[in-house]
Length: 563
Image (cartoon, helix red, strand yellow):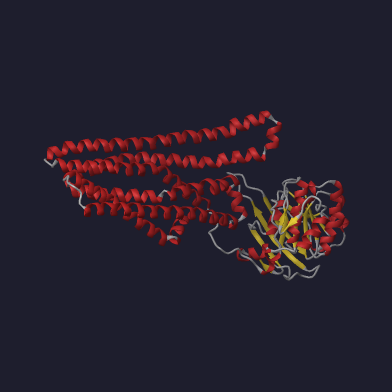
């Protein structure tokens, strides 16, 4: 809801102008009905002045109505555009930990269905307002025609509204349940795409996924949508029957009260005229409710607030200060990270970890699956915030305010890295000559070319995509390079080339390299080898001895597991 209010504040001037024009159009429509009633009550030859009035009212009705709705619909599309841009910026600014807690399917549902639902609801605002003004103006005119019949109509319509409100509330609850199910549906779509290999190979798994995982969610949504639509159709039918029944009651009550038949006829004529805007208002309810549910869903995600700033820092520049090789660069002091638990079961814990990296050092991290290697890499990159302990870079302790500056020192290639087609270097640009030269060093120049700052293709094998991801990290020209099992997808020949040629070359260029690796035959390339074991970080003395006397070797002793 805060997002909607923010957009309304930004476009308040245009909104007021459009609503004023809509009001003029609706009032012109009411005035036309009044003129028609006069002509019915006193039939006579039309005078030139009366014809001019009718033509003028028609012109105002059309001109102001068209202008108002054209402006409001354009504004509605602008609001959708703004929401898309702002929501994506909020996602970009939200911490990785929060996004992982929300889950990809929920984020996808918000960026697609929720924004579309809110846009549809906003685009209905012009018609809701226009019909609302028609109804209010028509009711006032009915009160002027006969206050007795107006009281009767108000009682009947008020009772109908109170009854219909119960249906509306039930419909809203059903729509909320359907929206919550959308997250499960999007998870099913993602599973069908991401698990395409496993599903293609096992027909039993395919059937189980389709019938036991996806179909129950789809059936739940269908059943609730049907029930919600029944309440909506019930409201439409009830409104139509209520208006026609009220028209009959007006004739009976008017005769009983001795009201002139001309006024009764005029009253019923206006009532019939109001039937269409009333039906439109009722018909718009599901769209408005869906938009309201989507707004509330967005608020529950607790994404980062919108800001125009991208937290750019001077350290993004290639000329940023880099410490001399061998001097302390990055330090973790008693750092611990706890994953959220489920129920009474405690989540995985990494640490406490005390670790110092020297500038220009090459460090390998090894360990089995679930040992904490990837978590340590995300802590080093500043993507995860320690539950306890401290992190410092160049002697500066890193807190929440320093995170953007801290992260600007790292280029990464994680095991599930996303490959962007556009290359971005220091200060938002990149050196085409440097990029082309490194592309050749990666043996990819025969497969991919660089046009301006775009890769000609990313539709490649996993190993080749990893090479291009390393290219993207390299052209960022940042002092620290983190590689998470980068060589695992490479063929033996290129793997040997990576360890024996590329890594030493990157080290000579001044890079501090931290790489997760299982290739023990190449451990000699590293200055140090650090072992992860069930969340405990150890220095493997044998591997360290084989690795040589890298900077900072003496300060790392085996660390004990947390109690």
